[in-house]
Amino acid sequence: MTLLDTDGVRLTVDDAIATVTLTNPAKRNAQTPALWRALIEAGRLLPGTVRVVVLRGEGRSFSAGLDRQAFTPEGFEGEPSFVDMGRGPEAELDATIAAYQEAFTWWRRNDIVSIAAVQGHAIGAGFQLALACDLRICADDAQFAMRETSLGLVPDLAGTHPLVSLVGYARALEICATGRFVHAEEAERTGLANLVVPAAELDATARDLAAALLAAPRDAVIETKALLRGASDRTFDEQRAAERAAQGRRLRDLAELAE
Image (tube, rainbow, N blue to C red):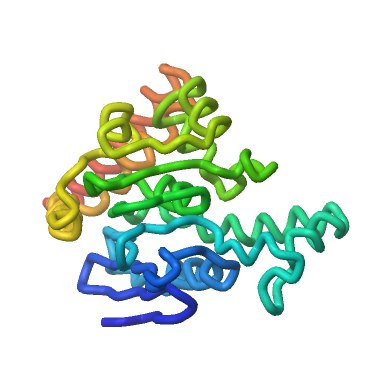
């Protein structure tokens, strides 16, 4: 069932699995503010039955990053250009970037597990979109790069936190400051990718992983994801307390079902 198909984004739902597809392969799924709004809408349209969301891109590249038109003086029609944004009031600039970031934040909701299936290029905003997901499966031709600093900018689409969490501060700084490519083998070795497979097997592997994630009871997965997401912000004793509270909720629920 197709729930959305607009501005380079298509959302389809098959029972408990949703698929969000970037649908502009001619431009290597370059990103625009309109695409970001479509991604936000996709998150809002997810039915409550959905437990797993697969994010993929049509064509040879997952997403080659921000559409270069954003860097022209005129920008996109109906959108503030980067020049206009930089000249505007600080509060307005902050609000505009915050609105863009919403497209990259809902993927980590506790009630879903999100999987990015990455092939070809994932550059800049494309890299950050892959980082927005809980898990990443990569084709063996995948190449990640954070090119913002070479343009005099910073990664601002919620990608820095997951990148540091995955590969550590020193490697994250080196990747971002140099803008170099991280190939699939390194991505898997450093924890950026969960799995690397031949390109022809990427979609099937994503489907298999989605099916495996559905095997456990939903509430147990939700509680476990919440525990793991919050672990780095808690002390050891705080995490122990969170585990006890979560297990207490699970045991009470199971006891009710047994009555």
